[in-house]
Length: 404
Image 1 (tube, rainbow, N blue to C red):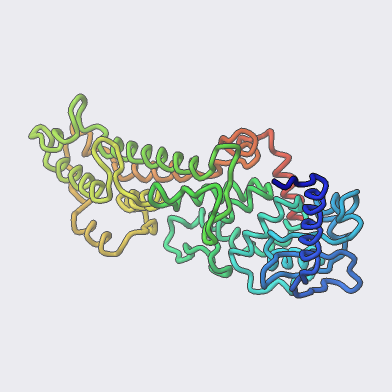
Image 2 (image 1 turned 180 degrees about the vertical axis):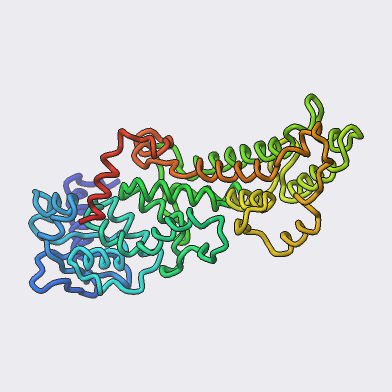
């Protein structure tokens, strides 16, 4: 049996490694060159597929807007000497958008899609360049943030301004939440959270995965192991549950003490006017998913339910239901049943619709401004933004940015 010289074996392995390195070095990078400014001194090699780009940009600008780039270009790293940064895992188009924005070439960022906007928000977070992108993103999303501000004031009116803006195809309300969270905009985060909670439909609609998101899904908002959307789901469910309990309690108040609602409605001891009026209320509540024990079995949004209760209270212009429902409600005689004229009948002498009207206003007012982004980031919990005095500096900082 022939023995093998260990040294010759090592030599053979070295030869193989050198051959492999040689063949790798001869691979020509097939990338389109984009020069952001004349005389650019840094090259960003972005992507490794057919859409790969070699973006030539100013190292000074990149270092000023991003601490990550500053460290890479001004250190002992290889990027510091070669002035070439390899970014094969990054999206070429998103990095090109970023370079154009920070070099103030805003007109070159055209046909912005939701995917590219999400990519820019994520890039700002990963590359630590939030302050550089915040003014531009705030301007691009101005229509959407103004819609959020308007919506809360008009959500129970008859205006048609209820659809989320479509100027950026595919953009969702959840994306504005992620933008406000990552860029630390407390007022926008609070109002967007409130509107999102009001509009969320089925219980599972408010949950999104924290990683591996498809292009159509929003960015994750996470604090440790706490998923923001899971917390929103819990708040939505508890809010709808409380509304359901309070509505049933409101329409049933002063019927009789110590007896179930169902037996009271059918009892001969209750006057005919009360049976008709209370029965009409219960009919329309159960049609919408409310139950006598205060549970809600439907899947409508919280704002739709509140508008429905408002319609029962005859609040002008607070209807988000169909014309057929409104017409049927009128024919049912809801709220138009004559009282029994007895001063002893506490239900007939009570203004149930006024009580429902008050309930709607209270729920609407209590539902605004429920989240502070910094509290969620630090503890994974929500706080009442209006009462969050310890983070008042965040609001003042954001306000100062808006004035500048």
